[in-house]
Length: 272
Image (cartoon, rainbow, N blue to C red):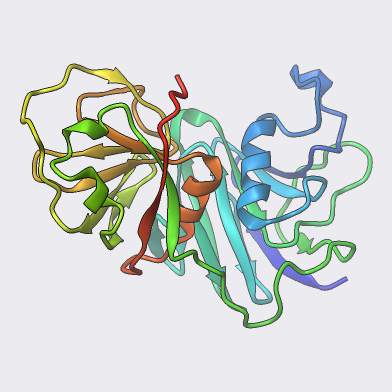
């Protein structure tokens, strides 16, 4: 097995966990070793990993590691402050190379954050063992590579968008689906600013606060749109002209900043 990372500092508490580890009952977790199994599934789906591979689970603060081989990683769970080679990063997915230094700091609300590696990690047998300084982290050799060396992610030219309950306020809804948009660098885990053609309201009436969830597409008074991220608020006042399901939201998150795309229309079905 070839090591892909070395632990410089484990943070408060870091360990390799998977859905197959059943030794966390002591901590009140009945299924699997991970504390947030749904977050782990979403992370594996983002990386196109098998669900039975390992990830790094960080408690209260992130882990500090040196990358030993080219690898793609993704962040999941609670929001955390991550530094790549000394600079903060807000990207959900990163392509790292040998010699890169990744360091996690405070985790919001002292919760749990996950660090996933493309292809998954070798799981530790037996009881959960915390990572310590100098430990090597190995990629799972039993999992086939999801892509060949140097192959780039396949980013769709269009992302499926379900019509939202407030789509009627668009002056020309049909024209909206032919517009080209791109994700800006102004984003965080609460939401993403999308730029493109300015969209015109049929009416400028203010909306009362309504339920929101990750993937909702809001139309601002200026005509720009916002895609709500995984840490968005539970209510919002901007019109909801559409929403992305889980697969479409992950495809949107993986779309590089500045890359043009369009939304493919799907008829509205109320998810609430």
